[in-house]
Length: 83
Image (cartoon, rainbow, N blue to C red):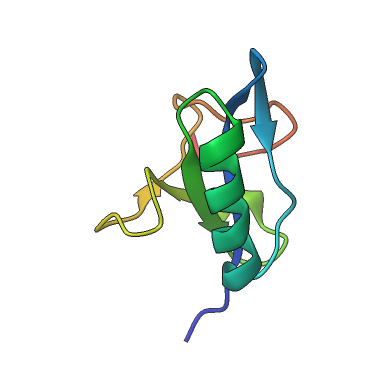
């Protein structure tokens, strides 16, 4: 079974934000806080520990399927994702 790290991404105060990578439980708590405090779309992301090329995203933690984050999708400039 694959172990993942999780984080929350979205827009708050007119700038893109992201939480630190953490375990699922902490990321779920962060998602709830961000939903209340941030003003933009919030995504829930996971990756294999330390490997940005494996980032996947959902609109919310309870959404059905993960979508691979690729170079043509919105992602942070310091991350290398598949082309």
